[in-house]
Image 1 (cartoon, rainbow, N blue to C red):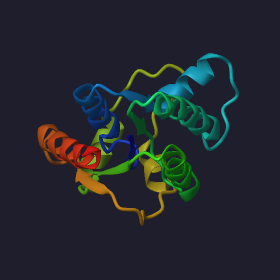
Image 2: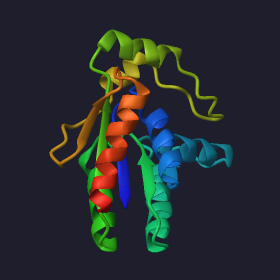
Image 3: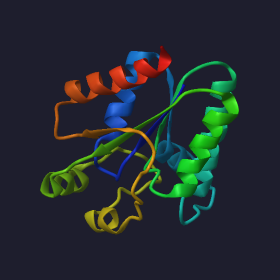
Length: 168
């Protein structure tokens, strides 16, 4: 199965994706960690992180080819990124589950962005201004939308139910 997490920075995607991966015993490809590794290796960053997404797609392709489940943890804010995941799932004939994480309280979201430090070498944390101006198109695909103001346990339970229903 291909599980795609989506949402603006600071909404809680990585926290929930990591917990879900542990619970499912599956792989995870975290775009920000991939980008950090590329920069650590001396790769010139591209302005939209295309290389980060292409590497994640390559990892996901190999994982699905091996018959395993993988979670993609990325903003996935524009249609070309989203189409890449739909196409990959279709090529493998595997279910695609999309989980969009939001933080419906702007003040709380801002606080999370301003306080977070993920200790990713070679990767700056976005500012609140960066998050507000980030391109993020509305989704039209079927998906589960979770508000990270709910407890982590509640979000994790809903996410797990959503993905395990597709596996049946």
